[in-house]
Length: 275
Image (tube, rainbow, N blue to C red; front, side):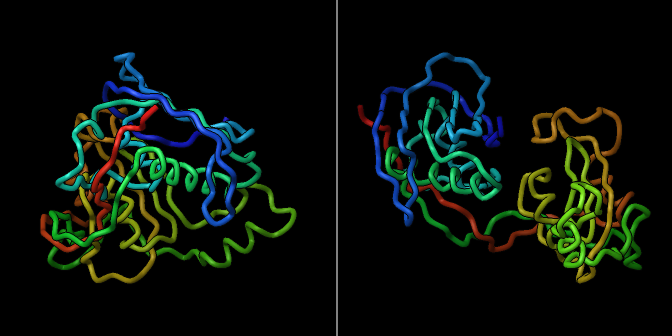
């Protein structure tokens, strides 16, 4: 099975919905979808999309369903004044049937269907907004602006690498491509700008990371750190420096606390599905 990565949720709920809906090319929906409360009290949860297109979500809060459906990190998602508390505490099970997974675009189609399901069944009302919030600015750690030993300008031609990887007969994984590798307490980038690196680092930092170095080159880098307890990087080795220290020692960069206007996703209102 291919996994739809859904985040973690909390407890409780009341209602069941099952319905059949016709497909619309302009607004794709699941052929059949059911939603019911999960009162198991368990902390484990998960979500899977089978090759047949059958999506199964177990023990998820609406808050985390929104995070997955709209591909958001916690610092990108905020609750409006009218958002009911149960959105972050009550849990749901969902079973829905979509089209078979034929290629990577099918995953995005299922994600769009999930978005429409949340709007239709939970009466989800949301909007984008620019807010001034606490952020981290990625800046030089040294006054002479010298970078650390684990970062260097990249020599990769990203456009050429992508074209070569798509060429007929190219073995999967045989060509080094631009992008990143991420794991608990670990990140490596190849041909990536520091703006994109900061955006990728936001998940581990717990807030938006904005590049303020003034560097426009693309870099190859490798960063290893010891995650703080309770962060999304839990499970990394316990030895090593903190993220803040590792940035300075390995990359010659540091995170400076600031406030800045950023785009956030606001949850306005939602309703429990009725039977």
